Image 1 (cartoon, rainbow, N blue to C red):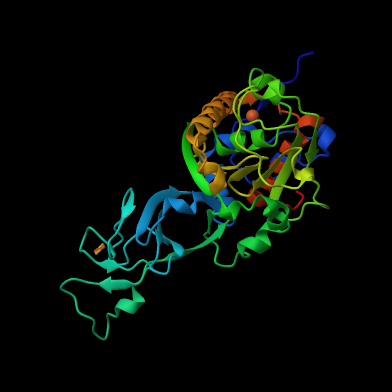
Image 2 (image 1 turned 180 degrees about the horizontal axis):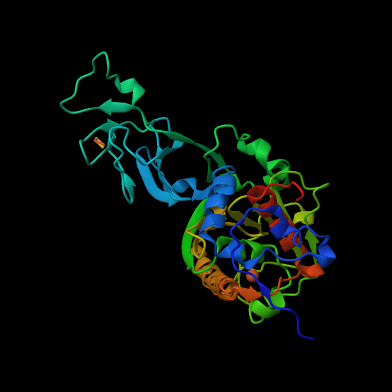
Length: 392
Ligand code: FES
Ligand SMILES: [Fe+2]
């Protein structure tokens, strides 16, 4: 049966809740987010303000800045940032913009010996963000260095991972995570070492990749020759009355490890209670972190949005120190990384195909099935942030 083609072009009144009533219908008749949510510059700009600058965001393992003075620079939600480790060993985040006339201070990554020096007029900042050097300029009544420090962004460490929040009034990270800290405590992730960080550019909107994380339906098809070779006996899906915190989880039940194909070498199992050794726990921590707590490792993929039609993934792989010290560790790890690269590519291709489909201004609204119900929950979360949860 043919269906009526709808004009799905971006409307002028983009944020009018009436455009999204279909998404808010009960699950069995709900529609997907309209395609413009994945292609619109205006929608993406609103996501930056209502999601990425309001919620906690993961920026990878703290070993990215191992020593005093170690720094990385990056752009997150189009905000230039410096992450640097201080003399007190604490990791801090600053806006990468000089308090004199705004120049970016550092680029790339590396280690500063004593201070972070602006390349324009050589103002120097210590690793706590205080202005400590102003060549040729002396302090006087109208110019006090103490008033010209760098702008600091909140940064907390959880599970060995660095999390930032632009919102000064946001909840502390542990409150924000609710019961998640307790749920994942048996993995002792904070004692693990990060043994790999892999980067994957994606030519698709960040939500297509994020939604796919919560979609169990695609596995037999997209991962036909990889993950699907391992029998999944069931999946538990997020239940807000049970799982409390800013995350959306699923638990996939299978025996053993899915880190490499059947018959290949595996990493040793972690010291976990038996009830946690029956699959993998997958929380999606809003707004950008997808974590897999497996029986032999923990991996975290962070999404860095790069406009409506592109994003970048970074995956950190974490294992106990004792695992990393095994004589054949690198060889086994390489097998894991090779396999996860293949699986990730399969997901990336799926997201990029959805992006191509979303570019059509003529379409009909999409729908959900019981097997991708969690994607509907995820889209409602997005809608509540971007549009607000008021009924039209
Ligand atoms: S802009 Fe940085 S010292 Fe002038
Ligand atoms: Fe997948």
